[in-house]
Length: 426
View: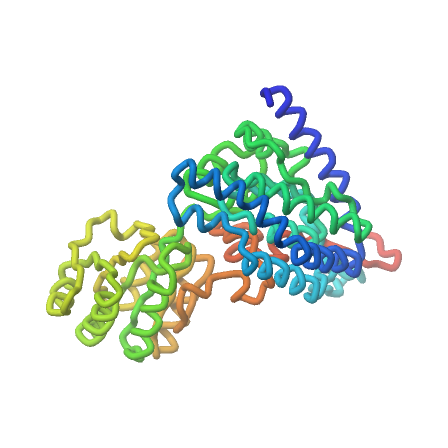
């Protein structure tokens, strides 16, 4: 596709999405749920065919010597497809939030004022690797009454095309416009540049992938972007705390899985409990091969731990998102220094305090400037499904309407509604 054709093509996608969004916004809940249930059925019926298409991407990825974790992300196994189907059914079972009116209050003038939840309109999603994101984004778009334009990575193009065909089939079965979910069919990178610069058609862009992709889109987009750049999350072990619980939670927050953006990358420990807590968590991390990059005080306490991989921390370590079996460790005076450290170095994604002091917990919740703030729980819970949102389209560290895990509500907006009986302004 040459540049002119790409421009025309994305313009057409935008026009079609805009027209479809008007029909999706007024679609009854039963019809949207019918489409979601049809999609779940089609995913199960077409598992074998989808794996054939997926094999094309896997073969190409291996031929290009793509790293094995990346190849693994591309896989549409029967288990992955069943999870996608169940996700569609779970969304269908959730209440429809479109059209609900909240906060209706009578004013002195006689009018009643409230807010109605409405779809955003058209969102564009740009993502890498995992083709199952095509189904997650499409199903959330359908349930929230939006239209969407999806642009997956070139490495998953065959899988994404096959999945998008099923989505459009499900929409048609339910009597909804097929253009409500459109996949960009070209791998030309210029299509991304066009998609993020069409405010006349696209209301918001959601990038999901590596930091480079998100930085580029944030820099070049001419429409609002829902995003997070990285996940430098912290677990702070307070004085006083339940040491056994703190060891269990700090272990899970780091080692449950190393690659997600909600894994803890920094461990802050109050001086009053450091001598008791650090050797215990140090032994756990040593057994799991986690490298600890510590301040001098932390390293001195951790030194006797058998097998501990200890490295002096640099200034850069406090800001680092490792996505690996590495964690920064710092001893702090108490809750004041912990909050100050987090607000300076964190990526404002997710931060947790482990404490038995109610006042410390309340201060941490109020003063830590992050999208998700937790008390006595693992940072790994910062996830749309775990938060009860049904599904998640991404995580936002921005401060506008969508912050933290973004589910159905994040794909909606509120408009004021006024009910009167002939009142006029004096």
